Image (tube, rainbow, N blue to C red; front, side, top):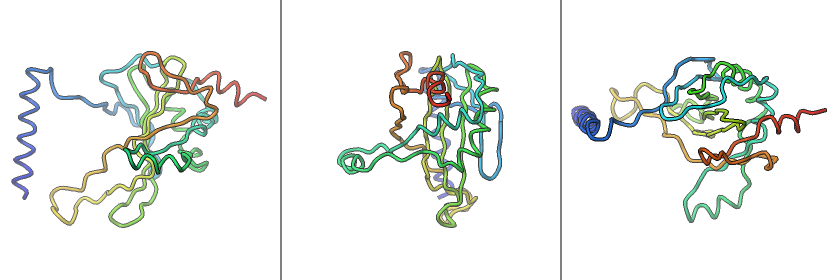
Amino acid sequence: MVSMIRDRAVLAMAVCFMLAGSMGGCARLPYTTKVVHEDHRVVVVLQREIDAGGHAHPVQLTAGQVAALLRGFSIREQQRLPLRWFAEESPPKKIFREDELHVLAPQLAEALGNAGPDERVYFKLLAPGLSPSYRYDVVGGWMAVHDRLLHLTMDYFHVQQPTKTTDAYDPNYPTPWTPPKAYLLYFEPGRFYLTDARTGARGVEVKEFLKSSLSP
């Protein structure tokens, strides 16, 4: 079993190197450039984006302003037909609870104030899992400000993730994390949730929303 997995890994690397000559290399992913905060509850890091950039970073926002922005988001897991018909019967759920915003917003505000134009802010909220095999309940994703819009992408919404260094099948290979999932995000009030003409992604018009929500 071990030798078979090792052979597959070597084969995958060989294919990657072969493709590098004809296609310019294997796909590259964002990588961590700075750890802003890490403890048993919250992880916030800056990640360098490979093929993107031009963000309006650094952005100076207070923890209260970040919390107000995040408070407007709700979420629904993206489903294929026919499961989509049943999923659409239930309303989307708020992404963040108030206790989560209390510990997360200050770290995100600091990260946005230190991010560069080619960096995004990646975060994870960690809570105890539902069983010994799945130690973490994870809410995670990333955010960035481009032009005047705050973009939020969610990879995990209360997803159970394993953390053991061994599993029942092969002690040399830990159980991997569940890959990121696809979600549909919503924002209220909807008039502040606009489409970025450059990327086609939706984001919150930061200044206009804050003027409306935090004005006396």
